[in-house]
Length: 294
Image 1 (cartoon, helix red, strand yellow):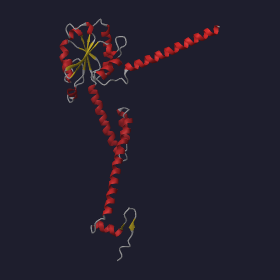
Image 2 (tube, helix red, strand yellow):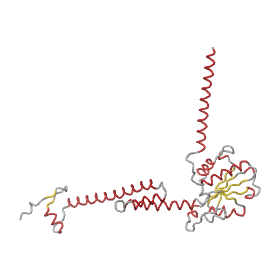
Image 3 (cartoon, helix red, strand yellow):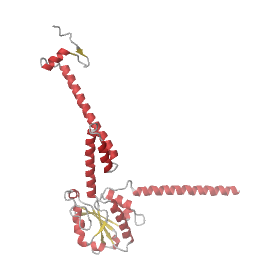
Image 4 (cartoon, one colour):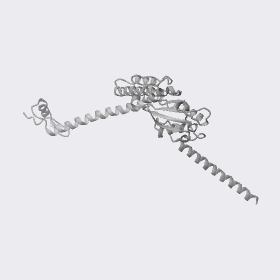
């Protein structure tokens, strides 16, 4: 029987006969090394293709979620309802995972942003509302803070507490109170309290009012006297207070997109330049009028 004349396959780089394939399949002969190598390469390429397809699906899901996440939770739920289970099963899986992640992040943010006001305290409250609170333990009766017995992140990181020492009748003190009132609404994860200077520290000099005590992890980290670092009484702003406490003292992450001091300086330079240009133009016009009189 002439078995050498059977059909051959040319779809592979290495040719085989139909009879040879049958013998290999039944285990009668071993697969040629070059065929084995080619098959392993084909399997590796197929596996790599499957991995890349899965990665591509995850990337598409991530991009979709970024767009959908800009909307409300209802919009995200509506989007997920519209995802076809058979055709987009992988995307749906990742979208649901990222949705759960976003919900967890929002919950964590809500737990941290539990203040939002400047809370008045007295000397008897100081240890509890400042020292102990800065350790990330009890937040005190005055804060109306959201309690979460399952969260202990503050116990590890500490809780920043900004203590404002004030006194009535001092202009800079009134200005500082205005600024901290505004800043506390921005930086809701930071606790702001206010106490009369001489009640906090007996015989505290009026020359050191206003003053900010910056507490964290149960101890005083820094103190800032007056408004000089924030632009002075006439030139201070909530942006400058936000910037300095955030970038220099690391109390929180500043909400300012750019340095308000440099922004102000650039504005003054532009203003002076425009003013100088207008003045030169006026001088030229006066000189021109004077020449025409002759």
